[in-house]
Image (tube, rainbow, N blue to C red; front, side, top):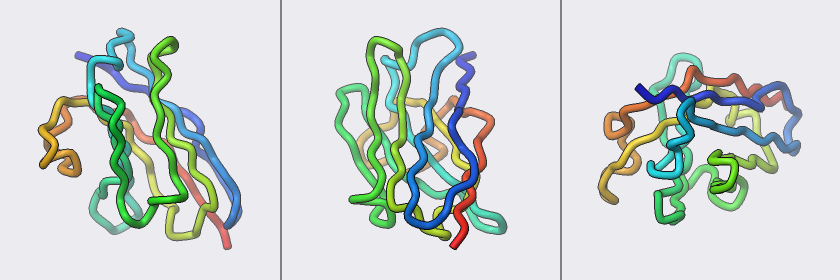
Length: 124
């Protein structure tokens, strides 16, 4: 069972930047598509961004142009650079790994491996 570990969450003010990172316990991340999801209090988990094994990226409209997902193949990590943060970005952010088909990349059920989540709080 692949275990994912997120790091980099914390407190920020609107307009600030934060960088999240995801690593796998067995250094197998490079063979998976990796996505970031987030879940705000009282809301459903929502797709944020994904980078496929081919390094193709996709973003939710709400973060497009502000967030950047990238993969470091040497370190075998996936990062989410979050710029121009807004209070509505406040949520627990989860890293997920899987091999979904293109039409299902935004579906959390298509990812079989999840991290424990990291809190991101953005104040106005």
